[in-house]
Length: 113
Length: 115
Image (tube, rainbow over all chains, first blue to last red; front, side, top):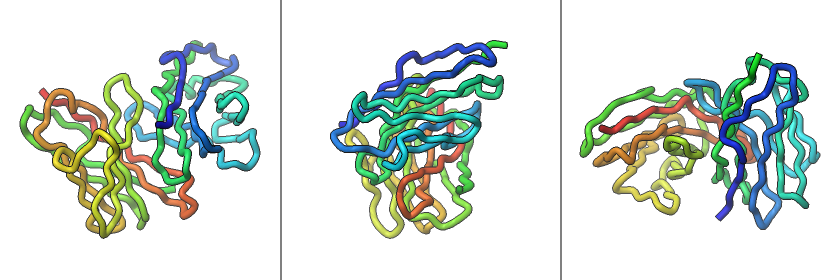
């Protein structure tokens, strides 16, 4: 079974500081990879996705992620945190391109003024 | 993108009863999915709902417990049957919008508490 690991359920970051959320996956084939964000009482919103094109993927709201096959990682970064970035972030993998997503446990990001 | 609504947004139910959750999309989509997000856990795929055929269930989920309907290309329902407190979760509907099958769009979820 495919699995996604996100370490640290709660992540605190100061406003203006780097946001780094780590995601590692297990997959025997190059997967599709996603980062979703969930704001309070809202559905999941796609931040960005990797689909075997460029390994550095840029998403919305200034986020980007880099696919590293050798490390089976897809870490999410944003150079400067904003208060509006406070949300829960989920990494997900679709190993076979058939929309059967496996999600990580999520990171609850708290931005400190 | 796709605009997805779910009803109810939340509910409190007694054990042994059943609840049907509705998912409505603003445009026709090929595939619809149902996920469960238990407290403190990640999202888990329950089943894939295809129009005109029976739903495909993931390991650990069965039709008797989670019957699904997909009467047309914009609507689906998930029923949580004979509920127990362990069924307390957020249930999310998602759809595949792109023909490439690369992106899923999610509804706001239904928060269910079973007493």
